[in-house]
Image (cartoon, rainbow, N blue to C red; front, side, top):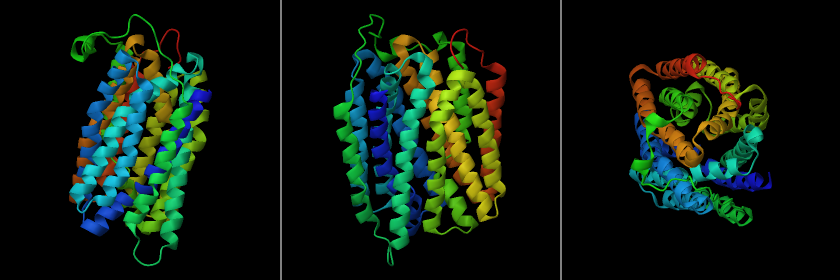
Length: 390
């Protein structure tokens, strides 16, 4: 578990750095460059989708060459360059470029990091391991948001965004230092992929459960647009730019507090039950966002959204790691992340356009419907495994 703890600290400091900045991006785009919801959706969608193409290849490289730690380090280093790019951005195009750098880094690091987590724990405690990692990840995010909240609240006059972007680089450097304590398990198994990616990867030969779940991820993500829209909705209900950030803090604290308990629970009752509960919770949350008209109600929805994240994020990675072919674990974890990331482009664009055309209610109802559909497919078509928890 020590290895997982240091991997969690890497994510803790990286998310501390990133989430100090992330809640400010839609506000910065709107204030500095006059960006509309549709443009914000386009920026978020493009950055997520372009970078997500790397995730499956990064996972494949980690399987083939067994350089998981080096790949993860290079991906986390991109978080530092992201902040530098934000400082020098002079238009929304520059912000888009910075976001792409950040997401490329995430695309490179996600699969090898998840393989490092799964290699560091007994399979019987996979949910607990991913839950611990996600808990530290979200704790860092919550602290970063809290720092941003107090700095914004105490800032006299116009907030100096670029100085704050510089300040956010400190925890990004600390995250890279944590790699000094991480040990990599070199798997000498003879069955790791030797062929080129397209020769080795044959989707029709994958486990039916894995294909079913990847379809579920695609459908769910089409309705799960960027969190920037949640912050815009809060502002529309009457929250100030500063108090909106506090709502995002509530979401991350809730996700951090419950990620490990839900992960441990999935080891006992099965991944599938937790995932279904998570998708149904998302349905309730997005339906709530669609009709939210009061600040107390919206605050409760942000807390419930944190519960959804705690139920889903670590548990789905544990599920993929368990049912993926052993020699393609990194590739499948990367493919899972790639599918979710690519779907964010149409998801964010659809949400932005629906918001512009029909207001805030319709896009959130669309997201609730897609999540409900994902839950139904999971219930009906994901076959129970013989020997592992799902």
